[in-house]
Image 1 (cartoon, rainbow, N blue to C red):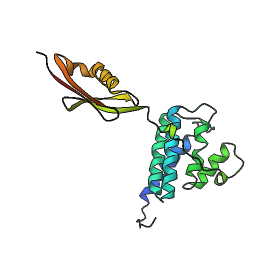
Image 2: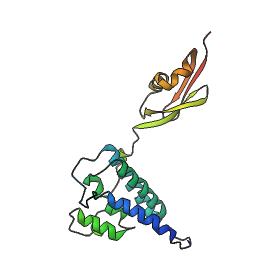
Image 3: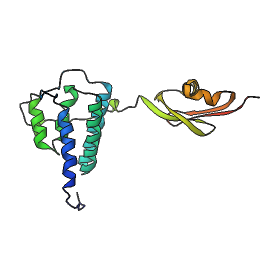
Amino acid sequence: IEQSKPWDVAGIDGCFRFLKKFWSLYWDKDGNLAADDSEATADNMKTLHKLIKKVTADIEEFSYNTSISAFMVAVNELSSQKCRSKQVLSVLPVLIAPFAPHIAEELWEALSNNTSVCDAQWPSFDEKYLVESSVKLGVQFNGKVRFAMDFPADATPDQMVQMATSAPEAQKHLDGMQIVKTIAIPGRIVNIVVKPQA
């Protein structure tokens, strides 16, 4: 907020495209409200709570531009998840109200609220939705990454080695080789040291 920025109308087009995509989360192609009472998925809730956490912190620090980029990421994720759950969609107008108050009011009213979105309670995030259930790691053979795969976040080192060595991509690196040593650190590394069989 303390920095100067040259005015450039080229940015308006990008804003318009984002708001149009945001708006389309709520409506079907016939212009009917698409938000429904379906249960939000784990991915939906993770996207939402990640956004709540980011926007809340950014507003307190006056980092509005990073809030908008977080919104863009969330809208893309919710679009690809085909999210229509009111459980998620009823929170987004409250979050975007400081940035796009008119659209926020329109959506808030469309979701059958009788008060102003400005009177709505600011949402709080829940850490339990932000815990990663899996982690993508590169699998190394003799210190060189050969492929990447997803491991459960709570996998033990032994389970990680078992998963890595039984992956189809690992077979060509294990063929005719003997495993000398394995190094597996959850969330960090999987390295399998091999040498030619005697």
